[in-house]
Image 1 (spheres, helix red, strand yellow):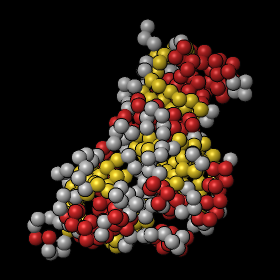
Image 2 (cartoon, helix red, strand yellow):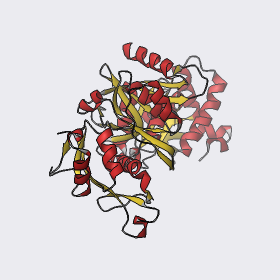
Image 3 (cartoon, one colour):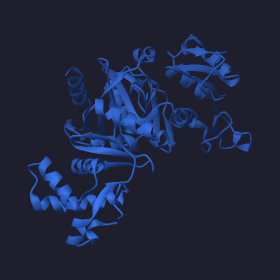
Image 4 (cartoon, one colour):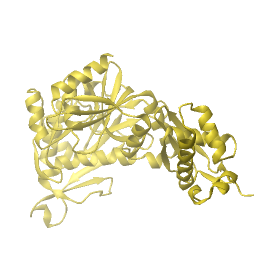
Length: 103
Length: 302
């Protein structure tokens, strides 16, 4: 599912969670992740890795994730962060690592 | 008893009959071949390796023999066998020795899954190992041969074996395979180097093998802990330059250069991650071997 395909209202309401078992190693310049089910390895940007961490702790909406990013990275700018979050979530969905919570 | 303990005639006879066991570091390979070029090259390039005639165990049993058909006489060919399996098409008989070396690379890279096997040169200095993963044509073997002739201990010019539990590097010190211009470059760089005869018109061009330094062969049982991962790239006319390379990207490149990363699954992932984690990672471009060696020596002293 692509988060870009949702409108603003839908995006705010949707909450994401991690749907795969994985192992991850992080460095300051990025992270690598091993998907235990598929055996695939993925390279992640530092922010993608952080977002995955947020979602591992609890399901969150785009807005909540953007707030987590803002509070953990004071250099991030409000609007930019939300756009970035959308893009990263789309990428994580494409990798099969996260999915929306089904109500 | 070493390979050089045998006369050329005795070695050729033993190879032709039951074969000989040559100890390469912590592993043993049993080789059979009637080709005189194999006996001559082994005697020159493996002179300091332990040899056993009647050892009970070998990790691999390999042979390089002519086919039994008319190609034995007409446009003679050589066939490499691992036990009875033939992994490659026959090659012209004058490529019998490179075929043996390529066959041994195949054995180590396809059979040794207790290790992570990376397509990388590896050398050691002051107890720390330098890994150089790189695709063909990057100047990896040339740089490796130059370093091995300037005080770095050669562990392998082609295959790096990493113990998953500890990330220790297991030496697999064998002759360094050089191609085309690199053969003359290394002979000019170090006049005392022992080179086997070149094989021409192979799939890789002209191929020659450089004998590994004696000290590296004698210390083939000593493991080394990895300290640096460097991606070398020969660029004509460039000034030697070492630049930081991001760890996550290093991970992906090391995994790409590994023969059995996928086969090892999570174990492979964790091994590469631990390896990258403990190493400083760089990309390196060079055109001059002396400049390159100065930079690597400084790195080893830091």
